[in-house]
Length: 122
Length: 319
Ligand code: SF4
Ligand code: SF4
Ligand code: SF4
Image (cartoon, rainbow over all chains, first blue to last red; front, side, top):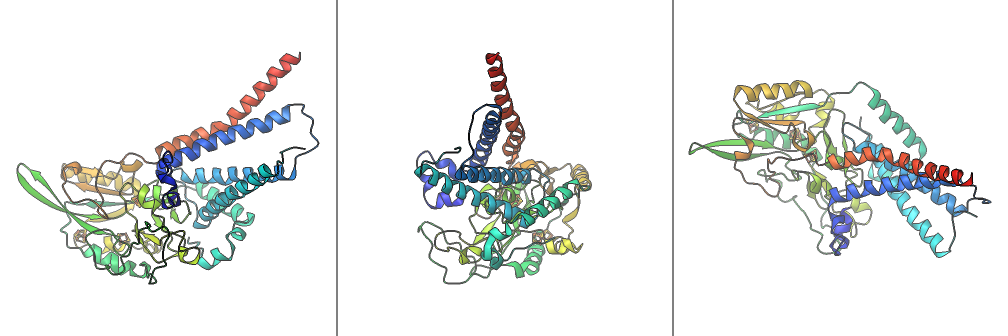
């Protein structure tokens, strides 16, 4: 995002790529691929294992929902970026804002669970 | 066709707008528009051998689009940090020899040396309307869109003026005016810097079945517009007749503007720089992203395979 350049973040040695938009675009996709594969693995592995748990924590549930939301809005944006795909202004705008909002929400909740040492499952 | 979000509505709460109703109905809309028989993109052919450089197209563009031009409020709010550039064209509206927020089309004088003789050309330049426009696809704010007829445009009510569209455009087309737009209503000192402007292919005229102003007002019929398949064929026919060359058909993965010239484009000599785009060969800038998008489909399968193989291993060990 242009804001990284504005606030010198892209000037920090090693972070120059943040100002190179085709690089950030590719990185974003690569991280998404890793995230999707990892989440599918975790969920399936959990379902297939015989681990006994009494339930998922509230914060764990909230985080799972946010991540799911990020994946859905992100997937829609990946579709949007393919050639020959036309979304309306409203659709594009809502996708962008919800992806951005969810990302910030995830950061906030993760920070909270980190500080309060709350896990995913009971 | 226009589902414009006003600045006020945005401020009233974008998250209400992000409600599931809007999302689901838009998804249905988008998917059904994909399923529908594909609307063909419109392509313009610009035959530079016919252009006499009269500038009528530039005047027509300015008159036709003047209502869309920025009306910045002065003095501009101070921006932080200080290195954020103020870009003010409101006192230089008369500039016509480059792209500006008030001039979306200009005539680029060029020449070529053929057997020691100088041959001169004038080339109308503006947004190429890429088939897969990076300016639209990479806008972090969702302020730009492409219409099914291939044109791309930036919504002046949503643009924050971050200039990413210009940086990702292979021709640096969009131009910024400070002191207008949505950023003024949010945190003008800290984020945003105006609105980006460029040729929108006279979308309001096309919507009514009319011809863009620059095409309509050219006395030499330099430009023609029509469906992609027909225009590509026609461009090659034209080029064949004059033993010439085309530019724009494959640039950046394909654009909806095709220049036809009697001389090779890489031999044309002209001034390039700020607001004066080059005519270089451009690879498909979105290609890497599109390839990664395909790899993304494999991601859940890879995750599932890993989980199942671990499961089977354990069962085997249990046996
Ligand atoms: S109006 Fe036609 S001939 Fe005149 S400068 Fe424009 S394209 Fe060239
Ligand atoms: S030429 Fe530049 S501004 Fe025009 S559609 Fe392509 S990327 Fe966007
Ligand atoms: S298509 Fe319309 S906006 Fe674009 S250069 Fe021509 S007159 Fe100007």
